[in-house]
Length: 195
Image (cartoon, rainbow, N blue to C red; front, side):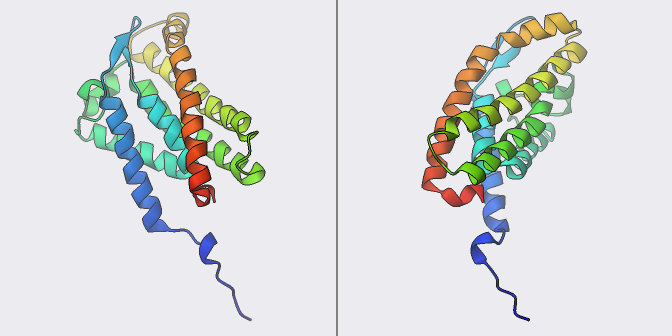
């Protein structure tokens, strides 16, 4: 009995590790760009969520979750990669830590749904709708974690935390749209990324 080996479908561990490292660095760079603290909890507006959505849509669920986890571990171990140069285990007590924690499941869900749609429907014009659904699912998860973080670490009520989170929604929706445009262009150029 002979077994055929399909090189195209074989996992490329080296490539995946490189992508995970590059996108973890991309998230860090976007987090370090000027941050504007807003709302009662002072959670800053950054380009970090744009990086999370872009990473998720390009890498898919597992690789995106690993990239975000690598970024979080680097920050918690002391590298100043969080917004406004934050780092260390002290950030666990910050009002924005819920968002940081939510990046992992949010990126996984958005990436998983994104690549599922790419494999099922190809990279057609209708993909924008599927990708928007995927990124909104990730966005919702991140918001839930963010609200919980503000309730716990900033001692806000559910209503106050939800109102504080609402400030970020318009900007995040714009970031979702930008991430979709970038990701679809990348997938057109490198169609094997979604396999």
